[in-house]
Image (cartoon, rainbow over all chains, first blue to last red; front, top):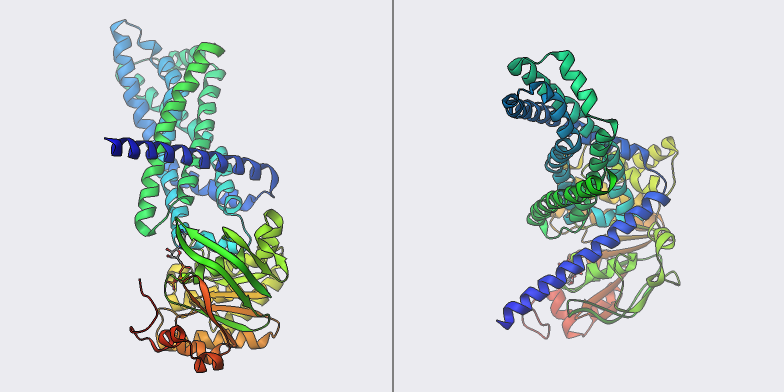
Amino acid sequence: MSNTILSLSSKFLKYFEDLGRFQVFVAKILKVMCTRPFRLSLVVQHAYNFGVESVFIILLTAFFTGSVFGLQIGYVFSIFRAESLTGGASALALATELAPLVTGFLITGRVGAAVTAEIATMVVSEQVEAMEAMGVDPIDYLVVPRVWASIFVMPLLCGLFMFMGIVGVYMTSLGIYAIDPGVFVAKIISLVEVSDILSGLRKMFFFSFIISFLCCYEGLSASGGAKGVGMATTQAVVKVLMLILISDLVISFIEVWWLR
Amino acid sequence: MIRFENVVKSFSKKVILNHLDLEIPKGKITFIVGKSGEGKSVVLKHILGLMKPDSGRVFVGGEDITELSGENLRKHRQRFGMLFQMAALFDSLNVYDNVVFPLKESGHNDEKENLRKIEEVLSMVGLPDILNKFPSELSIGEKKRVGLARALVHNPDIILYDEPTTGFDPLIAEMIDHLIVKVGRKRPDLTSVVVSHDLKATLESAEHIIMLYQGKVVLSGTSKEFRNTENKIVRQFFSGKQEGPMVFL
Ligand SMILES: Nc1ncnc2c1ncn2[C@@H]1O[C@H](COP(=O)(O)OP(=O)(O)OP(=O)(O)O)[C@@H](O)[C@H]1O
Ligand SMILES: [Mg+2]
């Protein structure tokens, strides 16, 4: 009994220790982001890689999500003879919720996991230590350029998801519920405001911090060979997904209750 | 040149450096020996400021480096070249970018001049014409030599080698030993610190030898002093015998 309590409390303590270290890490990144010379070529390179790695899967997923969503929403609305609203309603859901959430998940799996694995491999094979030995701060060289790249690229990918999702909705709306294209577009314009799109992009902006910070952090905290790399990667993905879900709820609450 | 004063370092209650006092002379090739897990790599990391002692001080060129941080620590580290145990080349960069890394990071941006320096060090380690290869395309011996080129390219005052020959066939090992001596002779002001398990090479190449045992120095001196010592621990270690005063854990 006392053993269980002891081990639980030590786990609890370790959790807070970890949290504390993460806070220090975040503070350091934010400081370096504002002070050091900007490593533009690295930012561009990472941004390009992030984009190339994930653009195809984003387009594909967006199209299918949009199509299925259009199908379901169209079915519900057709019960009330309101099929013409399918486009507008789907677009609203896509912009404010679906696009940032699904994009966040996809990028975590595609880009985030790769970032953690890459940095963790560098840690366990002494490359990060070698970098420090040459007087280069790994946060400055490895982390900050990836954070900048994430902030620039991920909201763009989210915008792409919104667009492609609506294309998917459009296909089912026209193909299955025979909605007039003019009406489809008009309903979207009347229902979806610029602020809705911005709210989705803003969410993705937050998520891009979560993804890049946590994935780099877990990578740098890796230890102990190939197994350590695998563990760090799993840890990173699980933590990021949880945090995205939680922060999504918090942000949505704030927006719905305070800003509307 | 490099001096440890009463340095204590422990990891989760296990004391590795136990009130260690140590002196590494300037402009010489010093070998550090001792059995595995004795804290040799930890000593190198303290010299670079990658680790801080729990107590005690580390001086490099008269400066207490345990106090350094930020820009000063960066400047301090740029005076060094270090060859890591597994070379530690950056996987994502090709040979050219790996070797140019310390140059660029210390503000040398003249591409032509950089290329000249890189070609010079690469031919010195016997690897011309591999500028565009990636580390994954190199054998471990080649990686290690590129690592050596990277450690040398910015003309450091001090070079640290962590087990430069462990795990190599005798030919490559001998070649690397020769390189270390060659580099040291070419620049008389260069201080080399070599952690090695190759005792024969140590006795042949070292200008100064330090042996660590249980977190302290057992003997510090020339090859000759090591060959002629009466110290039982040193004799046992260099003869490779199991029987003797040395404790194996
Ligand atoms: N970062 C660290 N965290 C915890 N323990 C460490 C760390 N670095 C080294 N140690 C411990 O310190 C001891 C000395 O390690 P070190 O790597 O210096 O040994 P070494 O003399 O270089 O051995 P080898 O010849 O095998 O390389 C080992 O017991 C090791 O487990
Ligand atoms: Mg070692």
